[in-house]
Each structure stands twice: as structure tokens, then as C-alpha cells.
Image 1 (cartoon, helix red, strand yellow):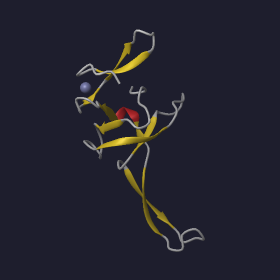
Image 2: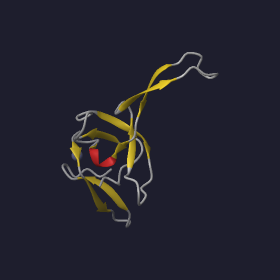
Image 3: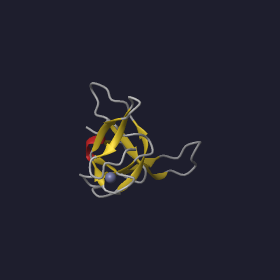
Image 4: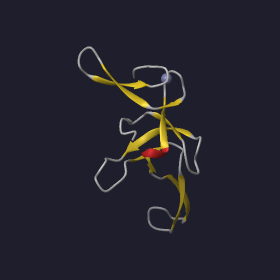
Length: 108
Ligand SMILES: [Zn+2]
């Protein structure tokens, strides 16, 4: 599971209707025992919602919003080699762990 993803990461969808689309992570939902880890990606997985006229919006209509996507459907796009990649973890000299691209070994 790509639980090492962070807000602002660029990801590519690897399966489903939006396969091949790239976008930036806008929001991450916390991992719980019952729920799958989900993320909202800018410009990906739009759903149409019908709204009724109300005080806030005088006219009803259809609005489009990004819907949460299971994290298992995306891969991180490496900022250096620009390819979808698995995330590795690398121990730094100061003992901290950092994420690493498994394709080009870039640490980010
Ligand atoms: Zn890379």
C-alpha cells in the first residue's frame, strides 16, 4: 500500500476509469481499520452531483467535484524521473527515514 503518500505529491492513476491520469494530491483521508486509505486528486475522478435551488445557490444544477479514490489505484510519480514508481524507504545518516524512488533512487 502507498501509505507513504503526502499532500502535494503527484500521482498517476493505474487502474479504473481514470487510468493514466496524473494529478496532485489535495487531501488524504486517515487510515482506519474499517476504511481503505483514500485520497482526493486534483482533476481526477470527477463525479457529477445534482443540486437543488436553495438560498446559497439560487439556481440548481450539476456541480462537478473530485471524489475520493482508493490509494491502491495510484502510484507516485517520481519528481526526478517523472515515472510512476513504487516508494522505497531509505535510512538517512541522521537516522531519519526518507522516501526513495525505486526506479532512479532519488530521495525525496
Ligand atoms: Zn525516479
